[in-house]
Image 1 (tube, rainbow, N blue to C red):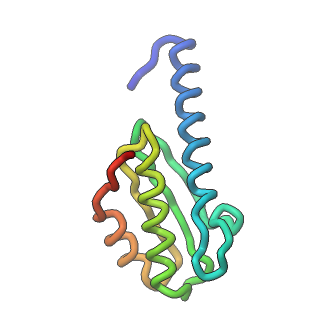
Image 2 (tube, helix red, strand yellow; image 1 turned 45 degrees about the vertical axis):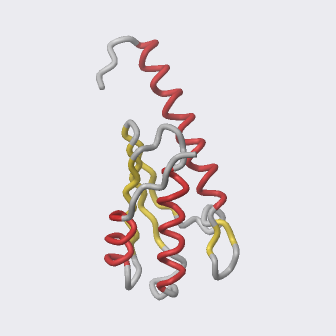
Image 3 (spheres, rainbow, N blue to C red; image 1 turned 135 degrees about the vertical axis):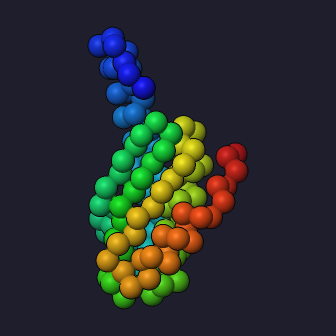
Length: 117
C-alpha cells in the first residue's frame, strides 16, 4: 500500500507499532518447556518482519540439539499465539541452527490457523 500523505504514513506507522507491541507481548508468554523461561528472556527471536497482516519470524532454539519435541512445541506456540492476535492473518516461521529445523518449519508453517476467539 502506498501512502501519499505524511499524516497517513504516521497513522500506518502507529498501527504497525501497536501490532508489533502485541506480537512481542504474546511472544513473552511463550516459555521453553524444558527450562520454563520465556523465549524473549532467552533471546530466541532473531527477527520479526511485519508486512500488513503477515508476520515472518526468524527464530533459533537454545541449542542445535535441543530436544526436537521442545523445538516443535516452541515453534507451534509461536505460530498459534501470534495468529490469535487481531490484525495477524498469516505467520511464517523460520527456525534455524537446529538439527530438525527443516522438519519443524515444514510442519509448523503447514499447520492450520487456530480460530480467533
